[in-house]
Image 1 (cartoon, rainbow, N blue to C red):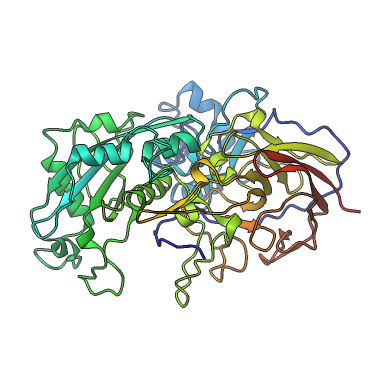
Image 2 (image 1 turned 45 degrees about the horizontal axis):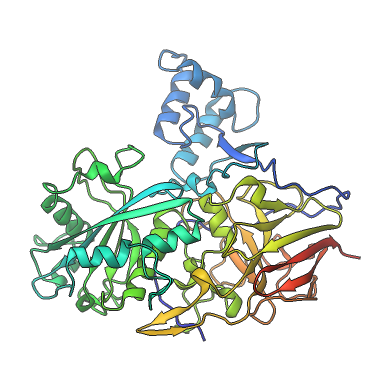
Length: 522
């Protein structure tokens, strides 16, 4: 049985796709030429975000005032024809306002990318995560002590634990270091570093759960963050943690000591300091930088692997991905995520490597490392995902971008970031024999839970696992419509639509990879 850690967050939901799989001619599958996101309809100022500024520009245009519209912005005005009437009008303005207010999802614009040697621009960027997922990322971590509870280690000791170099010989490998885990997971395409500070809060732990704003001494998580940032303002230049220079703190981790675990000071029936990635609602601004999101919660620093993997998972939220599980209140041991030996995933269990879906969303694949099935009978080579960035994507009909419905086929081994689960000082294998797993992906461009998301956990969701008795598929296995869960979603969100293909596994080596052949079903 898996050992679950309940960590709350979520920024993206699943939707029902309306495409159907049509018969396609036999063509050579291509790894290059993968369409990339270049903008959104209605993004008049072309900053990859639809917000109030775009609404103001369209309003001015409709009122006949073009004085504030630059030549570049004028070129993007035609994309604001959201009602497809071939003219700009009040209906377009209303639709644009709905997108800017996050009522409706933005409409993406894709262009073909002929260069397969370049990284695919991170699709997750469309939800405007605060933390970079490619290139350089820098984490500010503050280990907060309280008058009634203290961490057992100094800032320098915590620094080595969380952001030290890779050490395959460590008892706590693969969670021996947050930085090392992300370097391996991203194939060196994300260089995550961090700096740790300590701070002792003014009040005892429970004082920061007086969330009734009517009380004169009301204090919240935001108040704790405000206090921390204000106190450290003289020793930290917060611009150092705003690598994209947008005035937003990229990421901040507020780590509370183990004495905060299990408390319910505000008597709301939930644990106060379960680690989470949440929104900051305050107004603090230091060095011209303000917080937007924060990772906050309590973990015992003496359990190094558990401490590190908690923040690996939460920083995954800071980069934009949701949890892949849903908590089932009447069965705390079953989180309804990706089950069984084939189901380990960092954004599901806070254990195991990131799946190829997560890596794809973060922009850790080059164009020629994602093979897209285009129809007919095609054979592909899969290498272990832990050693090399690669996967096969099977779209529903024609490929419609990464925010659509598709299958991803990948090969996993019990190595590198999949090598073990660490409980205390005990290393427990996640699984002993690797193989192929198929992921059913169904994501949409929307921040928050979509109205299409089914809370019963039986219908559409961002990510589902198609597996062999909750394990991996191995040599000779044939995946067909008779395989459990191998189906597209129908108009009601149920998995009933025959994909019309088979996947056959051959040349299998559980340590290195295999071949898969995708063909139309007979």
